Length: 165
Image (cartoon, rainbow, N blue to C red; front, side):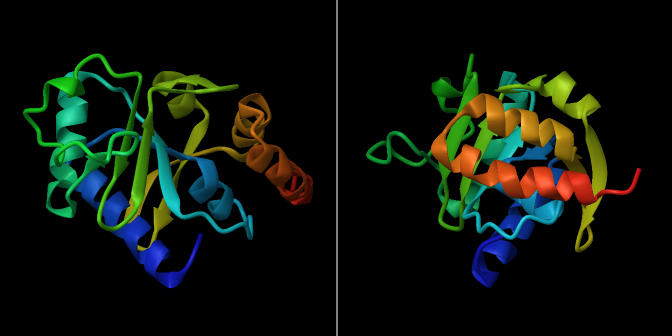
C-alpha cells in the first residue's frame, strides 16, 4: 500500500465497512498489493451494490471522518440523509483519513455480482473481506486503459505467472 499512515487508514476503513455489514469487494491498488504488488496506493477502491441502503451505510461508516463528494469538495459534508445518495453508479468520497471510491461495476469484470464471483476471502490484519482475484484485476486494469493501470500490468502479469498451478 502507501505509507504506514495510509495502510492504517485503509485497514481502519475496511474495518468500518465490514462492521457496518456492507458487502463489498476490494479492487484497485489495494487488491494489487494483496497479490504482491509493490506499487504504492493512497486510496481504497471497492465494488459494492450501490442501492440507497448500502450508500447510507457507507456514509454512516465514515461519518466521523467528514466525507465529502470527491468531485465537489465545495459542498458540505455528506450525511446519511443526502438526497444525492440515490441512483448512484459510483460513490467517490474524500474523508479526513483516505479517499474511498465505491464502484457499482468494474470495467473488464462487471457489476458487483461478477466481482463477488471473481473474488476470494482475505484477512487484512483481523479484517476479513473479499478481494478481486489477480486474473480479474489484470482484466480490470487492462479494460480501464488509464496510463497508471497500464503501467501496473507487467508487474501484475509477472505475479500471475509466478503462481503455482
